Amino acid sequence: MLFDGTLPDVQLNHAQRELTVKIVYYGPGLSGKTTNLQMIHQRTQPDVRGRLLTVETHDDRTLFFDLLPVFFSTAAGFKVKVKLFTVPGQVIHNATRRIVLQGADAVAFIADSRRSASAENNSYWKNLNENMRENGLDPAQVPIVIQFNKRDLPDTRSDAEIEEARKKGKEPVVGAIAIRGIGVLETLFAVLQSAFRSLDARAGLTKNIQLTEKEFLTQVFQNIDTSGTELERLFPPRVKPL
Ligand SMILES: Nc1nc2c(ncn2[C@@H]2O[C@H](COP(=O)(O)OP(=O)(O)O)[C@@H](O)[C@H]2O)c(=O)[nH]1
Ligand SMILES: [Mg+2]
Image (cartoon, rainbow, N blue to C red):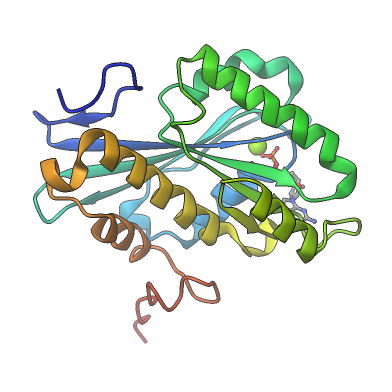
């Protein structure tokens, strides 16, 4: 056994030499989950990304979920798939939210950083923890990264307030303006890093498939256009051909 049976299954298939890392973008309706995935999709090299699958209803809200798969092969010949999902935020779609959350390796909680949205954020934070437990996921074991989005809008929390939230909780906190691509890749980095560390602790990725955190993150971000983001220095964007 590679992992403790009480923990959620690590999607590591030795026979097919494949690892699937599942990340779920969670949060209230209209907080910017779909926008995050759209921005990631736009900046990812077409040859390593799948189609961004989005299901919209007539009122322009995502009904089921969005899915963005990204693939790469490791030096040891393992195929790694990163699957990014979003959940529908509307209250009535809780059953769907719970299903999408199944088997998540890490969660990006997308909050609307306006003060007026605090109660809704808190209620979805509670809902996330409830749904994790319903799915047999231990909230203490599944890493969460918090994104405070919509920082361009009036009534947004100040930098000091966000700093306070950062100090209060154990989760990494990222400020964002997802519609302008600000904080989107930084959130993805934080959530993938957390997912890797948790998977490595459970399934020994470094030991068992010779996949290090550095290779994992480099393989993903060398295929994403990091220009203008905080990740630019760590993962320089490829020089575009003339
Ligand atoms: N002003 C502003 N609007 C945003 C931002 N991010 C997303 N939105 C808008 O908020 C609305 C809901 O976003 P969407 O990504 O569909 O939310 P979802 O329900 O969480 O998937 C859309 O009209 C987005 O364009 C942001 O950073 N600032
Ligand atoms: Mg959506």
